[in-house]
Length: 514
Image (cartoon, rainbow, N blue to C red; front, top):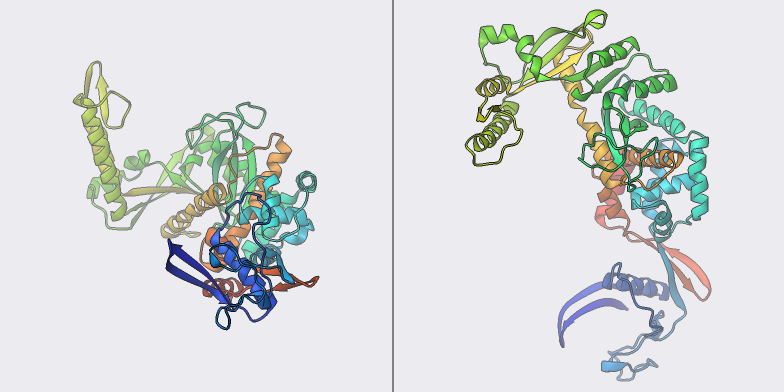
């Protein structure tokens, strides 16, 4: 018995979509349900009562090829047979394949050490469809998982803080990272902000320097990841706290939690200050941070004197610089690299800024602060000295480290720093795919618990992406429509497994390592 969707324009059939052929009542019920879902995916309907009677048995379908009689089927409008009640019906569908993949990854990372199924369901539900805690109940119901009640979810968030779930997850995450990378010696750090849909400030939610130029109350979030971008530790700070002051507390707690002594931390130039680097070194950490190019003419004075602005592509140069003053002054190793590709990009940006400054200088654009513009009284002109210095430094990138040349040469220092983009990738996933922001919680304990759920979801997402070779969004989009059907026939229920599309088969093979 074939089940098809027919598209007509007026009385003309323009398309026929074959859903499948049924040989039993159960197969027919499943195919009819599938066809209905194809007709109106996600569409809401008005509750107008029973408009038609469903056909659930093969024997109830009119045979148009053998007789003009409808075999007991009731005539409906436009000459079509109406559906009649049968002995079977689909009572639900479940995305069991997707759920099995997520729960399997959760166990592989060792997160089931928490022994809290409600917390697990919150984490996995956020991966399937990031939404509010209350709406997660709908998400779990839709994929066929028994969802906890809202009060049960709130009690879980409270347990999350009381039992230090984040600490246990961080321990499991580091163990997984060591199994994967073979070392815990190299970690990346960066800081970002999460804003709140609340205009009122408190001890945590403060208006501060926002990377998104927002004026809402916010909180600072510091994240440690391994070189592959897998999260190791996350911490929450007040919204007006300076980024440079978040690094030491995060690293100190990481060191105390895991007993790691030989560790190299990589951070961007925003963490670069003499006192910060001294504190890192005094705490026993090695570091690699970005260097500001304003010091490059002094660090590379000998090169500029001998060779001018000439560099070879990917050339590495080294120097030493005293950073800090008085008793805090220490000599630091500086590594520079010149890149032809970076030089071309820098020159394009310099040309754009010169063009902008020229328009202001000639009165074609209103006066505002811009690079390469010098204003003296009522005179506006290009700052040629600044332009020449920018041209001289185009293509250069600097790095500061306390590692010796024997421990890590210049090329290895640069390669380690280039992995820092993985932190940004994890932040983007946290904010976009997992929608960690905006935050609607009010109390600090609930905000901390929310961050713990997001941290666990980020770890699972990075793990699955690494295994599958595709984004977590595509993984969910591929497996969520693959649904098992729960069919009831004559009072008995049975679950029919789905037919796996080729794309889903390939994905599962990649995740399972086959």
